[in-house]
Length: 142
Image (cartoon, rainbow, N blue to C red):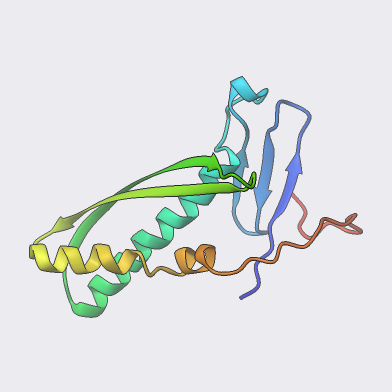
């Protein structure tokens, strides 16, 4: 599945206009990092993508089973450290609550299904991030 994102970084702090050609969001860095704190920081976008995928997976499986649920509330956090080789080791913590008239067993099944969402599987599998090259033409116009 191919995806493309375009980012325009503007001179103020680290504010960036991020688009996929259809939707637009603002990214930034916290004030303590020299940003203006007007948008999510990069690591928060990663957690947000993972949380969104987990919630969508829960909703998908509930619908598939015919279980009626209300809101899904997920909180994600991360703890990052460097190992002895100087590589980052990131530990992600997820807490999920699901509203609805479902049993504890059904709730446990749905929360377990969240860990099988596409983004989690993608992040846990192999990544091959190519080195940046000079851009010839804009992919999207903002």
